[in-house]
View 1 (spheres, chains in turn cyan, green):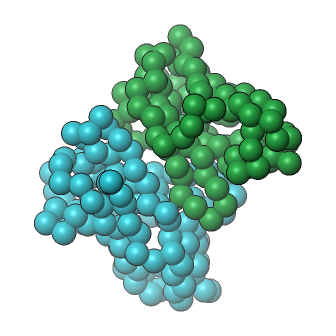
View 2 (cartoon, rainbow over the protein chains, first blue to last red; view 1 turned 135 degrees about the vertical axis):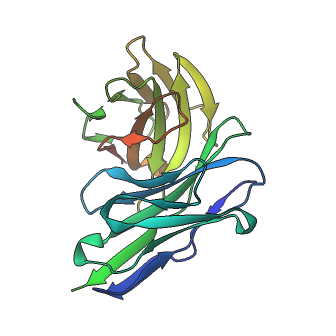
Length: 114
Length: 112
């Protein structure tokens, strides 16, 4: 069955550290890719998305992600994290050739120490 | 422009009861998706409605049913509630279901 894997369930970093959160999916067809973020007490909101074109996409708040088709990956990065980046991050994938199924990863809880 | 709204915010039910949750999509959106999010887990897709029809469905039993109205708002119904149905139920709207989804604040359902 198709799935989305987020490698780390919990990540703890200090401010100014660099961040990379892994996301891999198991599906050989065409995909649309998303990263969503849920800040404490707030709604899920879109961080960035990839549909086609340049595989390096930039999102809000200095985040970026790179789609590597050969590795079925869409890792999220930020060069220097801030305390306000403490949140839960979800990777999600739409399977474009499979009735547009939307599959979510289990999430990564990111804690930034001030 | 109002975003996605959901009602009620919180709900407490007992086992065996039935519940109806409501969602109004963001203005201009025609597709509504429902998710169940258990504590500490990612959203689990329940189903998606487009043009008043259930377009796709996740791995949830028939106790979970829904409806979409001509104004694109939607309801999620759960019959014969189980303790395991306790979760945050999220509604998300989008345009044609292919693009980014905008989420509501959720309805916290507690089944006792």
